[in-house]
Structures are given as C-alpha cells and as structure tokens.
Amino acid sequence: MPVLAVFNGDAGGNGGWLLRLDERGNPATGPEPHADLIAAMGPIEAAEGPRWIFADAMADYPAILRAGLRVRRCHDLALTEALLQGYDGHAGSPRRVAAAYARLHRLPVPEDRPAPVRTNQPTLFDLARGDTTAGVDPIEVARSVYAEQLRRIAATEQPSAFGLLVAAESASALVAGEMSEAGLPWRADLHDQILNELLGGRVMHGARPPRLAALADEIAAAFPDIPINPDSPASVLAAFSRAGIVLDSTYSWVLRQTGHPGVTPLLAYRELSRILSAHGWAWRAEWVHGGRFRPDYVPAGVVSGRWATRGGGALQIPRRLREAVVADPGHVLVVADAGQLEPRVLAAMSGDAAMARAAGEEDMYAALAAEAFGGDRAKAKVGLLGAMYGQTGGQAAAPLATLRRRYPRALDLLERAARTGENGGLVRTHLGRTCPPPSTPTNGGDPDDSADDPPEALADSAVDDGQAAGTVARTRARGRFTRNFVVQGTAAEWAAAVLAALRLRLMDLAISTEAARTRDGPAAELVFFQHDELVVHAARDHAAAVVEAILLAAQEASDLLFPGTPVRFLMRPVVAQSWAEGH
DNA sequence: ACAGACCGCGCC
DNA sequence: AAAGGGCGCGGTCTGT
Image (cartoon, rainbow, N blue to C red; front, side, top):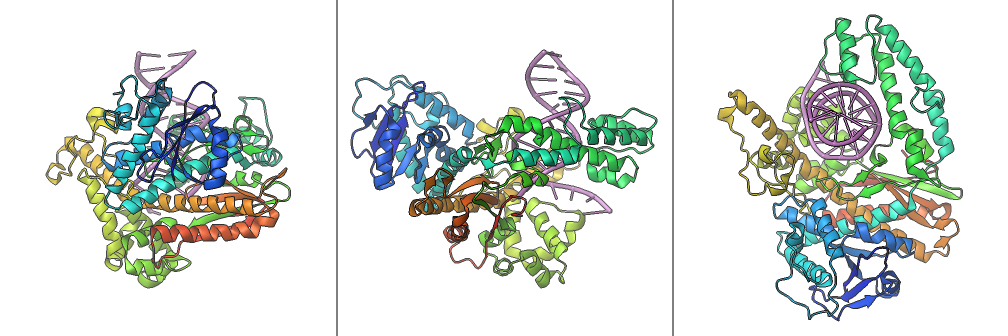
C-alpha cells in the first residue's frame, strides 16, 4: 500500500502528513499529521516497506537519511511529472516541476481541513504555470497528482515499460541521495602526491607551479617573435600565424598536425593546467571533506536521462587522479563498468538478430569484425560509433555502408530516429522517455513553449539558398541528436535499473550481516556512479557478496528491459583498493 | 565590476 | 586522416 509523505516545508521543521492510499491513488484513510514525520515513517518502513510517495525525493530524502532512515522504494512525483510532460510533447523541464513543488510546499494547509475535493484541484502542470489558487490543500494536491500520474502512465503506449521507467527514475533519486551522503573515499595525501609529481609542487595562489612555469618558458622559446599566453586560444592562434601557420582553431589534433616544436610543450601545459584548475588543491578544499568527495548528483539531469552533477566535476574526474580514491582500512572498492553498453543496447532494442548475435559475445566489436569486416575490429568500432552518433563521412563512411547491408534492422532504427528528428518529430527510448521538442529561433534557448510550433522540416529545395544553409545545418544537428537520444537514453535506463536493483541487494546484504552498521560504517554502499560505471565501498569480508550482487543486478536489469534477448550485457566487477586499479 | 559567449578539454 | 552524441567547468574575451 503506497503511503504519501508530505513535509510541510516550514523552516527547519520536521512536521508533515502521512496519507495511506489504495493502488489507484485514492485515500485509504484520513491524513495523519505528525510533528516528526521521519520518526513516524521509520516503523512503517520497517514493518511494511511501502512505496513512499514523495513530492521531490531530491529535496526530501537527505533529511530522512540524516535522521538515519533509508527507504526501499519511492515514487517521485517531480521526476515522474517531468517524464509524463515530456511524453506529452512538452519540454518537461525538471526545473519548472521543481519550482512547482517548492510552491506546493509553501502552500498553507487549511486549518479546518475540508473534505477532499476531487474537482477543481490544480494539477502540477497548473502549478508549474503559476495557475494556483489560494486555499488549495497541498496534501490533496499531491494525492490527486499521484492518482493522475497513475492514470497517465496507464494511458501510455507501453504502460509496464513506462512504469518501469518511473520506478527506476525514482530509485535513482534515492541512490543519488545515499551516494551524496556516503561520499567517495578521497585520500588527500595521495592527491597531493600526484599533484606534486605532475606539477612540481604547490605555489602561492595565482602563480604557476614549477612544471607549468617551465613549460610556459619552453613555449615562449618556441615562439621567439611574439609573446604568447598558452591559456589564451586567441594568443596561440596569433603566435602560430606569426610563425607562418594559419589555423582556425587550437584543438590538440589540429596543433599536432603542424609539427611545430612549440606544440609538444603547449599540449603538455594545457593538460597539466587543466588538472590544476579543475581538480587541484582549490578543488579539494572546496569539495573534499573528512576524506570524502561529495558531489551533488542530479539524476536525469541530462535530457537523455543520464545523470548530471552540480559542481565538483564529479563526472569528469581525470583518470590519473583516480589513484587517490582508495578504500578505507579493512575495506575494498568494487568497481564495475558495463562494457560496450550502447552498441549492445542498440542490438537489443532494435531486435536485429544478427547484431544481437554479435552482442552475445564478450567483445562485440570483434564479433562484428569477424562477421562483416574481415576481422578489422577498428573498422567495426568506428562504423558502429559513427552510426550511433550520426557521422556520415570520413573514415566511418565505408564501414557504415557495410553495417547497413549486414544489420539493416539496427541501422534502420537509428535512421528512422534521425529522420523523425529532422522532420520535427519526437523520439522515445525503449522505456518511453521522450526527447524534448525542438527549440525554435524565435523562442531562443527556452524550448518550454515550443511544443505547438511548426516543425522545421528539411527542405532539400532550399539547400541552394544561402539563407537556408543555417536551417539545414540545424535540422541535421537535430537528426543527430534524436538518433543518439534513443540509444544513449536507453543505456541510461539500463544503468538506472542496475542501480535500483543493486541498492536493494546491498540493503539486504547489510540487514543479513551482523556488521550491518558498525563503527566502521555499513557493510557495503554505493559511492559513485557515472553513466555506465559504478563503485561500491565494502567491508573486505563482503567483497564477494558485493561482486555477486552486481552481477545479479545487471542480469535483473537486462531481464526487465529486454526479456529473452540474446544480447549479453557485461558488467565486470573488479575488487580493488583504488579506483584506478579497478580499471 | 560583472555577465555571458566562446573555447578547449575532462569524462561517458 | 580528421568528421559526429551528451555533459560541466574554468579560462579568456567581449559587451555593458
């Protein structure tokens, strides 16, 4: 039986209401006010483990965690609303929905609670548009939104798939809260060691560390006729131009082609400078505390459903620095990443039997190569990646033609998605996440109101027109976006399902072991997730159980999304002391 | 002085 | 040899 938990949002208070619902979202009892909502939730979680309905788990769950409670399941109204609005062709901006919930939380609850009114309650969408009326009851609004969401989910083309998406998305919000609370183990001493080794030591704020200073001198020496600031692309372009080399960008691969002696120190400078500014001492002072790096995860922060983070650059930690991520004494890190996830997803979702056969192998690219590319693995890989990203020319062109001939169903899925996008249409992932509508030049960057605008169609007859060239380029870009969306988004769904399954298994592991929560911390907990890779921090004794849990979670996710598929989704857990070791 | 665009690159 | 998806971030540069 689902239980709606609404915090009343008063400053710093823990008060709120619980309302038990039936499976259609109708009230099963009256709302219960609680001065300490979390204290009231604890026994219910222990006894029943219900699906909690939260207005916005990303806002509500941290306080619950701080109070020492973890819940097994939830339905997140905000994330679900964004999914449903997206499904209906609206932009479904999570920001708008979040704002609606902030407003919902601020609504005063009528002292004399009226009998629940079934009509005239504003929907969340109304709230999001600011159409609220005074005197509405936030508990009843949340309840009716939930009931309405159940109805809308049931009305989708594939209700069970969409329901799975909602469950996985909601679970992601719980995982994100738990991972932020746990934090990624980060050894400051090792981080220092690496930085010192790379940069030659730490200097006063603002000055260049020795290695960077030396490289800057080398660069200057290579361009004797003109002062050069290696941090400024414009200055670099000017320096090369003075040396007789005219470039239109300073991308590393462009620079490398020049063969100029200044290139080697310049690229080395940029690489080190980036580590210093993005993940150096200043970064650590801001983001690492008590031996833990705690980024703010934003599940579904990317339109494709991938996670984003706010601050801390958590999804861009340079490989070199991963040596500083080391398990606590008596613990291990279990690192697992999904190998070749996106091409396997394509094989499974397209139902292309030949490609699925290749995806049943350990190395899918090698299998494709053996079957269709005379054993040339690189060709198979570049062709398939090009197909998923929308590359048409260059070295991908020839392999693409081969792929289209040998794996027509898989390629057809991609090309249909691209065409739909080019024609202004919307595409969906395997579970039903819908891409945002195209933005139009008239409304600039805000796609929120563009759902009814006429699509930009690809007009071949207008290609000659210089004015239309920009439109054609935008249209093609839209096609590449929708083409990639279906694969990237479905991969994100598989990964979210793995996370959801794994966190339940890890909770069970904690419960079943005596050392569920010793002074050394929990038996095992998720501490990092990045698109197709996860890290579990576990007491050494539980390493084997965690490995098993990861394998089972991956299998569970595959069975949920693609029952019976011959495609193998590889998730290879490695037990290691440091993240770097774990691959 | 501050905001926003652009750049180049880190990760997937 | 050199075209194509999604992000976040810190730096420079431009405009106000």
